[in-house]
Image 1 (cartoon, rainbow, N blue to C red):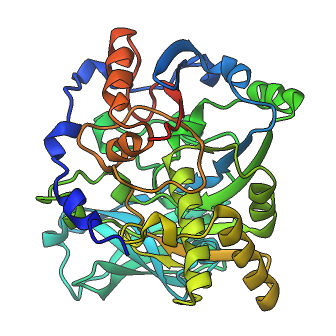
Image 2: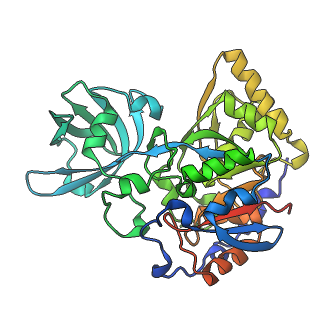
Image 3: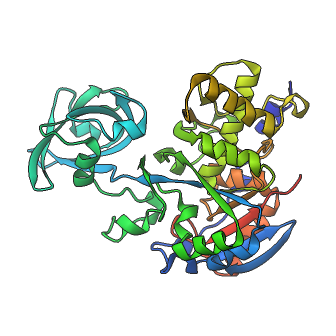
Length: 411
């Protein structure tokens, strides 16, 4: 076991991962077309500047790009009380009758979700909120009441034979990141989704993927670059700043992940050239490796990766990526399943032992955030050089901002 990991983690000074981000450098709206954004390419300490439509030129032909195909749902809803008070309900995670998000979207008549509740002090414990919706010409009444007041679990009931997805599409609005400091507009329904989004359930977009277009995909295909998909339903915790005294004390929200057997087989075929499209894909891929570790160690068969699970291991004690992924395939064969569903709260900060990802496509992240720590873990101290270059070249920051292709240093 690696007994020094905790001491190293506690020595991380969070102020070293802050930087000044002027308000005018935050991209409030995306560029059009999507692939016209700037692209910073970082490799072995060298930086070049391009546009995103040039991405295929900077990838090896044997590369495997892994995308997160989650789709943002209109997760923010408003209920008006008779007194005039407005209660905001932001859906976070389903609790009943199932915690599996893909299945929860197909539930009919009633469900329970964990939520963030705005103006909660005006919504009393025994009070039921109602609103009237029109879905495909059909009028229905939606009721909201507390299933668990302390844990912000809200029971939603509707008097029509419709799926919850149909209801929420009519009820809510796309929840933009709070740092955009603007209301959701009609255009965000399209621009705050990737062109390949398929699996409904996220409350935030995997924004590195927002730059991809059909034209870029055609160029990738022409070069022989393969692509595969997983699903991580991005939660609101992705925007939570680090306020704890040390990184190990920071609370990480668990997010649901879904993997197919096809993905795992493709990873094994191109194990040395895996490029994660976005931090959500990277966290999902690395979590998959650690699930293989759990199976090999016979710790558990439950897919649950705790935030600090990877750190106490000495490198010599760890199996190879091939061994971990093969163990997962063997387990899936034994269980007769072609899909894995799990949850991860993995926290990647400097000192993390990357096991699967060689490259990362990502935007520019908030100062002092968990995602800045992830980038610093990936490229080392050069993260400062990268961000300074992005400032010098007038890059646009955060969700609707510009992009980068980062190759991991062997530090």
